[in-house]
Length: 274
Image (cartoon, rainbow, N blue to C red; front, side, top):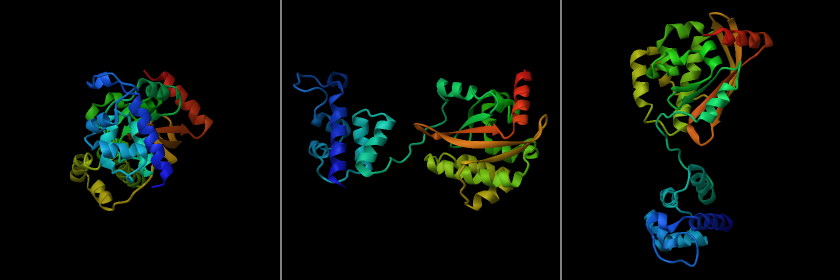
């Protein structure tokens, strides 16, 4: 590793260490300098004081991911700070730690709600929909009317005949969804968590089982979604997928009407919905 990278790592660790309150961690005694001592960080991180000292001094070579994770825990680093330490030390982010399904922040929900004619959803790595806006409810699916266990895109695509009929080209959509789902699960570090869902879908849908065996990978990215809406008729929506910062397990998809006519139709539909 270049010496400059080691020095940057050491400087960052030193800065984080000096900003911690020793009393909060049960370390007593008067100190000439603020923060924890090196040996106290080493103790909290379950590594040798000599090794930790070398890291701060830019000596000893690149630490392992396990050591970096221990130090991150010892210094009470946030996820962005932990990622920064990995980038300084190893030139790459840490492996993703998948978090079970959680809600979204009120701020993100408010962002969804500002999209008055653009359906938008937030989904997990297992493609459970956990947030949506009003246009999504009236144009795509009224997720609020479904029990939480049924708010899964894959279960609906492969298990609900009504969802199949509104797709302009169900076969292409199904193939794309399975490949993008596989990529999302790996990216979020959730390969073991999706196993139960995959087993369920393979039992209930021969079509899913066949597509899953193909091992295709697709990136959600952006594109055009064509729907046969029961009120609006055949409509085209441009979609774009976005990562949620700090939450690799979540993805946001926004669908924009392609034409002004469809925009106006959705605005009217949203306004008239109960």
